[in-house]
Length: 265
Image (cartoon, rainbow, N blue to C red; front, top):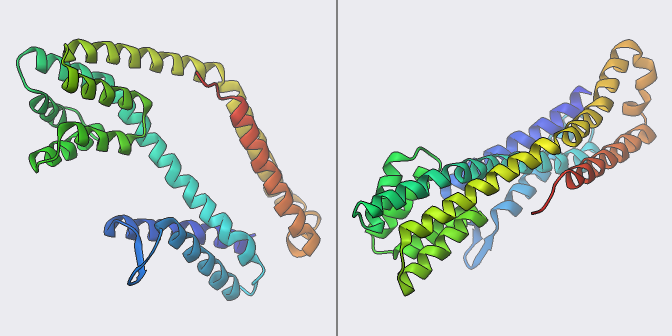
């Protein structure tokens, strides 16, 4: 059991290290002149190599086939969850930021000055994104293009709506503060509806967590109370195959429960 945990945690650690290195350098990883390798592929291959090395060191080469990819999936899931939390935080800050922009423009500020005010007053992560866009505008980038860069970073339908409204207003004219006020009210209503949906589906999501943790708890308890009963699952080839199949089945079940508990609107 300890060896299996070492393989899995090793995969997550190496994934985090490669991700941090890629983020520091930025851009794709260069393998040779004229050839570039995507960072995600580089991370995946580094974890496969790590799994082989760790498994050979603990005298279980066969585990590399299973726990190298599992470590990569675990690291990828953690990174995706962190990005999702950051995007949700930015979406929560967006209505207040739009209200600040609208009030500043109504007081006589230009759009760029209003964006700069948001960059100063709104905390991270949305404030940091606006600071980058204002810096890009000061270097000569168009305001619309700078906001499109924020939209690409957020990957939010709400902010896409804001960028579309600003683009149309700059091309055809109109009362932009009033437009932003309507957009902010719409976003607040969407967020209220989303919170209501989450409260209605909380039972289904909690059931998924309990069902996922129950087999792990049972294995841990039985390994302490009846180790000779649970040992064949880890020591025999058939038991290891059954463990892998059960893990895959549990992941599929979690995915299905998650899909059922989500509502598109």
